Image (cartoon, rainbow, N blue to C red; front, top):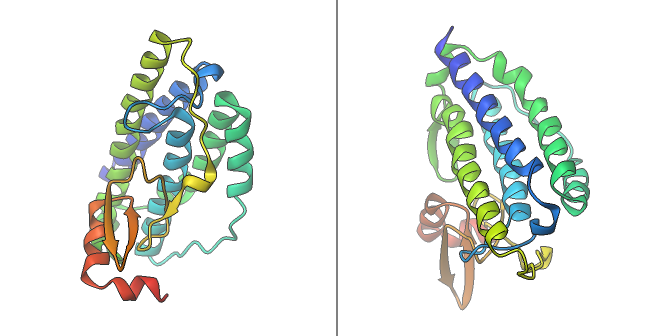
Length: 211
């Protein structure tokens, strides 16, 4: 087996474990937030967006841009509103869209790099990130489920779309309560999905606010 195919298989296995963790969650616990602000619903939404973001970077790095219309957010939101089982079904179908071109990658292409707003990233880093990020949130999903089961009478804190903010660097939706970083500029607080986005913004805020 090639190195890249090992990475892709690992990513697929990790993603399926997360889908099962979501699918088997109690619908009554879908919107209960843990102390740091994450809920299963928010976590699932974040993983779908993050996976798409990295998959598109990989495709761009090997000179195969993916410029598809933004038609996936509606079905994603409908699945999220329905509950865990529908969301897991959507996640599997959406992830399957990326698999064919991930399967076409070669070991030589692992060294290819792409310029992003948070620095230069290699295809190898991006492919490995697909699985490491999902593993992180699978563990988190299990913690949320366990905490909710121990407090079954707790009233869920509703997930509100209007609380989301846009990372001004990469454009990802970020919940202020769970943002990886924040930065105040000219009296307004901006939220970021990763420390690298904050660093890029700090270096030249106007570049991202005027685009």
